[in-house]
Length: 152
Ligand SMILES: [Zn+2]
Image 1 (cartoon, rainbow, N blue to C red):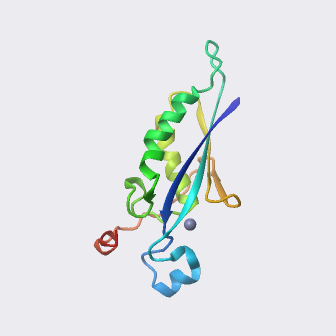
Image 2: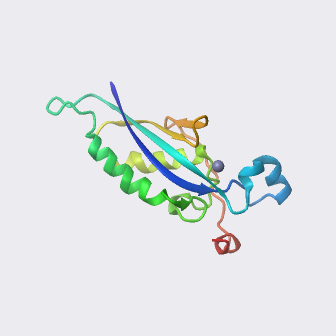
């Protein structure tokens, strides 16, 4: 197996809160990340595809194709957006790096023309990142209330 990685960047804002909790509980758990109008990150996304190099091309996956998939399916949808409100596939999900990485995986995996998705690594900062390898995980999707939608 050879592992091929494409790195991409995007900037987005988010707010971490659980809509089923009151303000004090949200403040206690999420602290500054619960700032009502959100806060931003310069995210770095690293997507790794594993496979055998093709005998004719030498590629596991054509990195231009992987770049295009990431641009069209992920970056265009999240760059300069508010992850809580602007991104269809994140609606109702607490947009932690963990949850966002899992949702990215689900989208990227379906689009890969060759190779097998090995990992999705998402950096929120130089020091904090998460990495997901596709094991089954449960993510809660909260009902999106009208009130929340109006905050946009
Ligand atoms: Zn944050």
